[in-house]
Image (tube, rainbow, N blue to C red; front, top):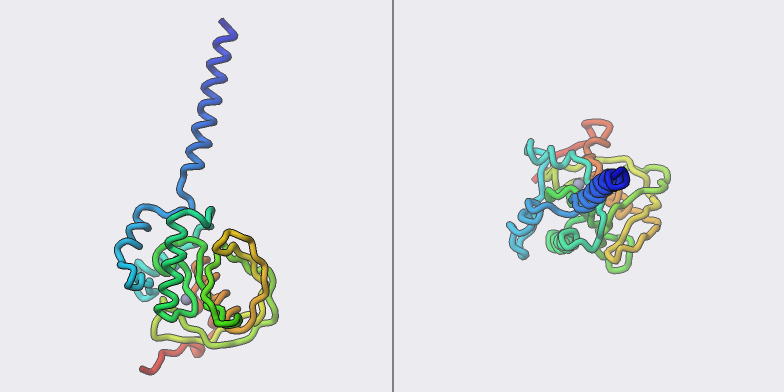
Length: 209
Ligand SMILES: [Zn+2]
């Protein structure tokens, strides 16, 4: 009698543990929600995904969020988002874009690698900046703040780590304009706009057009 009662207690405890593990595994922490997939579906492949603007209050809230890490670079939703951002970057001639800028806050971004032969666009998952050199000042602008540019101080050379499209962990050194763009996009993943790094209003100008 005692034995079987303990068995029941054991089974209940075990059952609950298994249930909670399963629930954790099924929780969509980095893969896309139905709403996020619908957002991509709502724009035809030949058109560019809408880029959020800081001048819209609701869109700015999204731009200010911390993006979630990508858990699986082979997740179909993540894959589709990466390919979409790559093709939009090519067609829109972007210097770089972060996934959060199209309203999907995941740690995924594209950078135009002007420092490499033929200047390819590359996708980076969960990028990190490991080391940085002395800063230099240069001009920056942003797809989420059209019509403005400013001068921002950033390290000219950075050592970075990320997962590539194959899911391989890569560590490399980036210099020049590509290093600046890389840092600008990593900032987006942390909800930071380039204007946050401008020390003086004098440094922000409206384009004359
Ligand atoms: Zn930007």
